[in-house]
Image 1 (cartoon, helix red, strand yellow):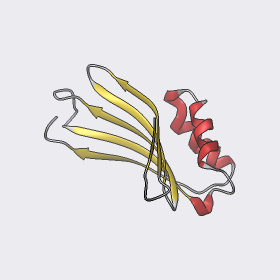
Image 2: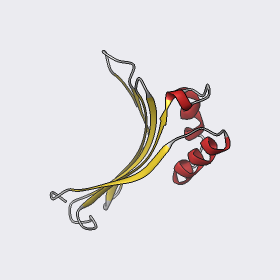
Image 3: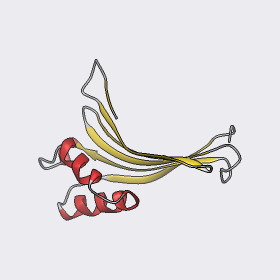
Image 4: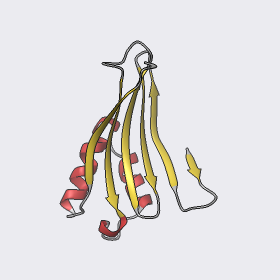
Length: 113
C-alpha cells in the first residue's frame, strides 16, 4: 500500500500488516526530504498490553549517508527478507556498506489498552 502526499516527496509503504487476537503488527518504510526510515510496530489490543505499552523499533538513515542507495532499493531488499528478520538484515546490510544509521526501540503508554 503506497500513500503519497500531494505537497511533498514523502512516501510510505507498508510491507506487512498482521492482526491476531493479541495485537496488530506492521512494518513500514518511509521517506521524506532528509531521511529514510524502517520501523516495526506492535499495537496490542485492549486487555493484552504489557503495562499498557505500544512498541516501535526503528532504523533511521539520513539521505546524505546512503552512498547512492535509494528508497526503492531498500524496499526491494526488505520485501525479499523474511519478515521476522527484516530489521536485523537491514542493520547488517547498512553496516557492511559503512552506512551510518540510528536505531532504537520506542515505547509509549496507552491508557486505552
